[in-house]
Image 1 (cartoon, rainbow over the protein chains, first blue to last red):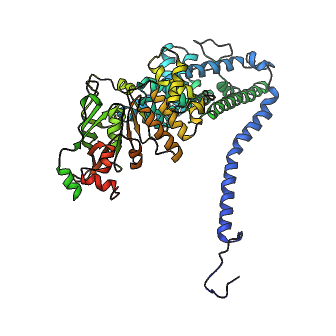
Image 2: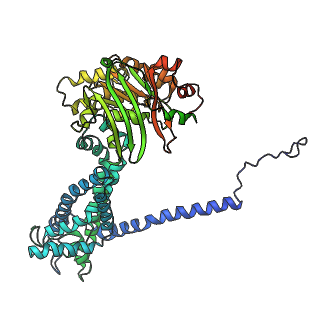
Image 3: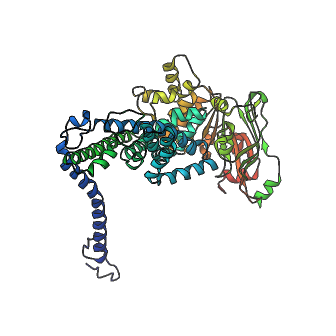
Length: 293
Length: 276
């Protein structure tokens, strides 16, 4: 292909050279990344398949309205544990959502450059790494010992300790994500700090705020350790001043029992707990998907 | 050398204006961001129902001065304004003055179009709702959108999100939002710098219409734009003689006069493109 009159001119090679070392290296490296990504999904799906296989056969309406069976009894369910989990997680959300979001507003807007905000942010970050059992021990000392009883209140408070930092830090990020230009527009129109937050910043940040709350709720719903010290367990329906059943503790208790019926219930409870978290995540994604900034 | 010579002269030359025509009188003696002296000795009178253009090279403080006029800079950490801005016999930097009320009376249009993430209608109604306007909202919204030359393009989709519009339309929406509350002064900080030439032309034509009802001050880095729209032009430059980069007003005069017969050597050089 050389032009005889111009010996120094070479046509560049543009065709693919799949067997050059450069190309081979690239193929190997991208395969490794793809494999790693696929591998990350394996635990989730194996857990799901296992739960559906072991717990699916026990799924029935009875689970939702019946009380746990005694030893050697057949049938039964864990309606009280579902109710207990809902109550305690709900209570924890009622405490942690307003608290966390108000703190996040301070961190992201009012006290942006403030020492107090920096310290609070550091504390929250440390708290996210707090072993959940410590939240239980703390609530045991702070609530159970004072009320002189295990209770749903104590369980809810222990869970809220785990939720607050998650809500706070995700909400701070969500508020920071609101474009500065939009915040400027709000102030430029003559908004007070409160008006700019209520009318402009929080509505735009809302999908992010909801995502953070759902993440925190999902985490709290699955926690066992904090409830072992605070809500304990109960075979009866919810009474808030007394020991309260929860799905997580039910799984913990029943999975170690030597009775076939209880073990099956533990599997079914695991499946329902995972489904609850799964549905919450889908809801948050649906809301988050509407995001537009 | 020349810059140093300039900085020796302490008084800048501002054209004499009839006090009755000046709706807002900005005398910025010194403007700081923390320790950094951003602007010094700049006296800019804003004349009623005219367009005042602020021109000058990057970093000359023209935006800083503009944003000081409605106290937007208060939101910036370390900002300090020395001097005064007279508006209806009040100094808006007086301790008794609430910056929020100042911003409700002196509207602002920003460099980047920044509509709120809400419907076109709600964007325009925003300021009216802030002021608890009780009258016919539809009429006010339509008037503002017509005033911003946007009505015909959006009248059938008022419920759509303001962010769904094109850049030029978004900027006109921001203008509609700003004029809906009928502020006396409208500040515009390089309102066309993010727009294409056609949208720029539309905004410029709009500005000329707006000055019948409002007083406009506009920052632009485009000298032709200043020539096309501004009645008065203020030229700012950067003084690097004292180590920092401090902006100051070099000269202010009616636009035709400033461009045809600048009094200052620095203005002449800038207009002839000898530095930027």
